[in-house]
Length: 398
Image (cartoon, rainbow, N blue to C red):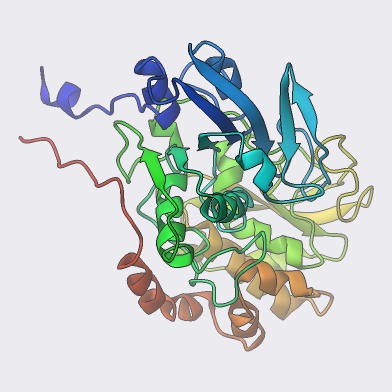
């Protein structure tokens, strides 16, 4: 074997793949509830519920679904009702309630979580898992997290640790781009929020994943975890461009490139682009564009500036490893703030940002680079607390 072959990345196997490879032994003889959706697939693209039907001596009692529903076809914030998949009831935890009931938990032996997280604090799946952890802690039900790689890798962190948290889009004191897998988040939540309980959380870890590997290097199928994240590039830029939802700007909803656009009818993109230095757009190409947001069923029924001609800025990732989407988008917002008195902030911006700090820095005239210097100590402190289940593999000899 030559050096290139020895150092070539091996196919990543998720916690689900590992469980199935062991013939589902971890599930056998047990009554299960599973928090999942149809984006939770094995290495061949087979959804978890379909895979579990092939495991003998297993009783799937109930499926719980997060935001966007079990079928992943509801747009952001849409109320999702409960339903059934064959004989199994599917209970929405993004509708009339957010947690399993005591009566439901009394009928199971194990609560399984398999959700494709996207690596950004705003994403509500971790908040739903946290709510389920609270219910399982209260009623003595053990949990098993079937882990998946963080699609943005596990090395880079961006954004200050949230100072204000507790909402669905900011449920814990972690950075915006946190670099953790869902299993690591579960360990973190267990230590931070449930240390005084008897909650048992096991994690079936990912095999062959290094923290420096992003999704394209994992050899796994990408299944959109929500309607407006159709690809990995959208998920990466979402780290920054989700903040646009707290401003009177369109974030690409109502187009085929959600979270890769920033625009409004009043925006003049060329003067804005001229103010953004090259270091703050590293790994991301920015270009002036014109576009019109439209209603798209299941994705964006009423996007901001629907049917209005917008001038905007398109964002294209040219180097995923070098890109820092939060830096790029904050530089954009700062330039727009300086150029356009039309820019308006809503309270939701601070909710997404984990407090008023980002807004106050921009409004005070701080440059993006100067603002980011102030969070280094925060991230260093967070690094001492985050539970790393995966370490980088040593370099190949020679």
